[in-house]
Image 1: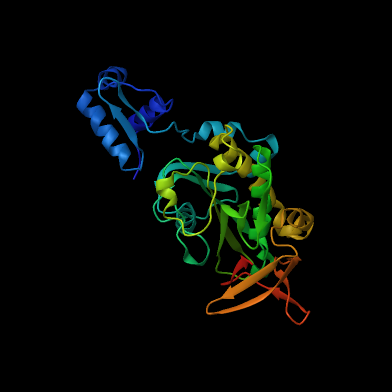
Image 2: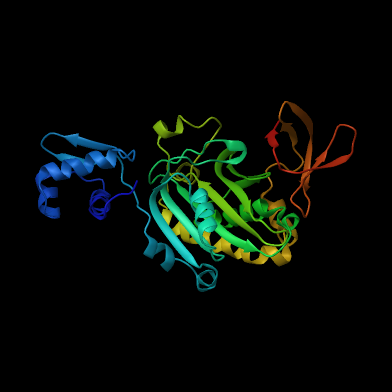
Length: 330
């Protein structure tokens, strides 16, 4: 499901939040008022709300910023530009990660491939959870990187990418965010962003990692009703100060690709001081849940392989791998 070029231009025209009459819009776009009405009805299928007032016209329920491929690429630093091989920006996908996985199966993609969508119809997080992905409200982005190494060497990759997300958020003006092992970014104990790493490979020494990242930017209350855990977004976290999703996308691409390019040779070890700085769980009581079983302990940081160091009830340190487990702060 894609928007037409004219529908995108119409959204951009209306993005200032001002009222425009059907006659004004028809003249501007050189079409009939009925055609404009049809465009608006199609845009509503993407979850875009409009306010219509008799005598004033139609406007967006709230101003929006559409993602722009040219602006995102122009926002990359010279160093970041070295790592990116291709950027695809699409209106709607079931999942950006699934798109890259399937595309890589049909044709081997180069490292540094990036895919962004304005909305996902089947976005997912860890443990098969749904990731709420409404149109033009958040950032949904996936990265592809090829590794010539054993799969064991990719342990800790999601943690490394989490640090990259934290750096990107800091660079757009956010402070106070933290990392919750193994893949969540929190702000004031509510989920702001999440990471899902999927590995694709058939040999023992060549693997492709797909890193999917979702960041809540400006969620409506209606969409947020679908989320089953405490959440927040950037708009709330920076107290309504203006920020750009395009600038965030540029920062994120630069930070994540930098981490991916270094990870094969360096692993997580050089980033452990940064993890410790952002660690939301360090020295706190936590519950580890694995299926129907659970255990309590105190989080004591992470290992070079990305394992959680858990001080158990008998005073011993256990190393917990992420796998199919989840962590809760107690």
